[in-house]
Image 1 (cartoon, rainbow, N blue to C red):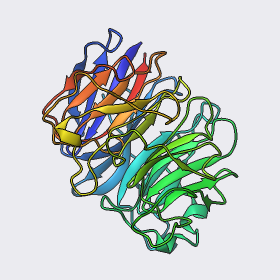
Image 2: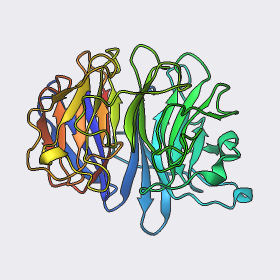
Image 3: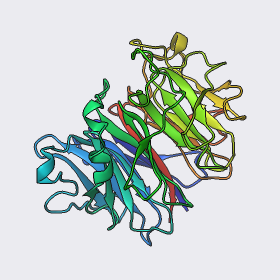
Image 4: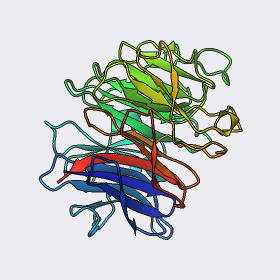
Length: 359
């Protein structure tokens, strides 16, 4: 098996491959040169792994393209994979998230987009249908765009039920228990200091990740604070104590080790740089009860940032971590964040990383 790391940037997609258990990497690219790639996924449920990319063409606008030969050739649906129905009066702004569903739903792929909308594909990502239950939610007119735009950026299908959890900027966390038909906000306990009262919804959530042991235990990195829920989002508690800053964009959980998660703290609110210019991760082994700084090999004197999807894990027994920065660097760890090596430098700013093992 080959370890594949897909790197989406402002100006194209690069593919890094490792044949020696993630210790050295060979870079291939650019693919889709000059096109912004804000979403990418590697769907390994198919006989031939499918690369899916959410691209932003300068002339033609946003779309989804796919490759069944790991970047050798790319394909698109003639009329565009994602098109708003005429009665919505809306137009697609950007594809921010492409998430294959569980193994027992092999052709289902979810897309989170700007404006805030969720889309479902039943043909492996070639075409998508708007999830009307979320689009027609009475809260939608009050959802506001954050500084990065208004978008569904997290999609978490439950592996055992019809539950789907989404998170959006700026609207908060919403949950459906009937396969994405009905939706309700799940934000109690998450602060929003820019609003006068603790709201039912409207929080500026940056990213949500599910714990390895229980999909109803989730971790959230918000604009203000880091939180955990143990009941599927019905209630949240702060787990920010011990972090050098409670602001940041990404959060990731180990897919194999319960209670283990990582954040990349940044100085809030407008500075958005690593504390003291030291790019580091913080890791918890007890579901946010305590945090430890990790990241030997990551740079000092670094005044860049890591965006919400420019951080991911792989599915090795010992979880690998991948970090991409706005100044075009990509780093990899094979020991759950203790140490990092450089995968790539001098790329355009990194928007999204996804890791997978492929034949």
